Length: 176
Image: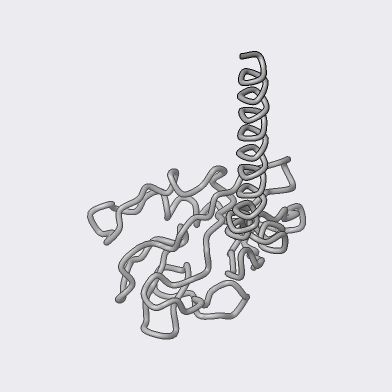
């Protein structure tokens, strides 16, 4: 009887060892298949950018690229802030209070893609057409945005998007 017990123990050991090796082998095959679904390192590198805003003077705007899209950063004047805050919500197609679109009233950070068909609105550079509301104007189909990036006139269905951003310091913001 001791011989049968020894054979059973040996057989159980071989079954456990074989099953363990099969599990390790299956994991080795499945891991690369799952891992290839993760974003590539170059994509992750573009997931967020830091922008130095110290050099942007009042009334000036800059454009940076984030995830392949333009992002408009405008240092608004006191008049632009007041006009945006005083907008009547009933006149807006996509009502959104100016304070909900900015973290600091003087700095507006928005995605520079028209929400109608994806054109890049004008109004960032000095001398460009800014539309009827002194914000941005989409040359493709005539959408007009105000100084808060809200749609005021034209075919665009929604306001210009606000990307996720945070102030790292008084002079640097992190977008993404």
